[in-house]
Length: 185
Image 1 (cartoon, rainbow, N blue to C red):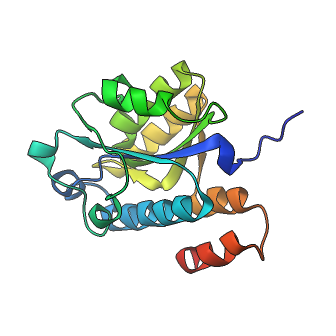
Image 2: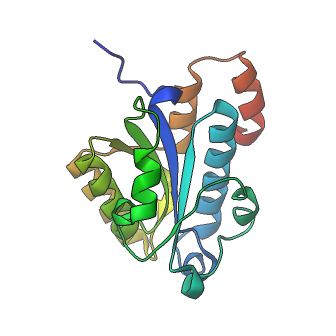
């Protein structure tokens, strides 16, 4: 039986819509942006592919700082769809990931809309969504909490960033652990 623990070769990180005009209205936006930054840095160090999206960039603007500066090498299609995988360019990027990828680590906004609908799209493709609980939010805490509850109900795995990062690292003392350490302390 295969381990149910996360393995880097089975994962990709998907960042959804932490844009300036939207994040200005998001509950606990600063902490969410900090967690997304932590997840991006850790994914880079561990070697996990990253895909990102913007939602109608013309209206909602670029990502908040310091996230925008981290996106230079990350594919980031602009979408109008709430389910990111329904966007043809994003769907093609997900389809181009290695066949071993069967888990998506999701961060961004809003939990009850784009995160939820993207998780549904991932499940339809046979990819298990792992929701970084402290890396997602909505305009209200109630919508975030109800979104996380619904995500659990549909089969998504929900946990905090540190739990996911340590699960990916497996043990202390490795080069990856030492490189990630500044981001998790």
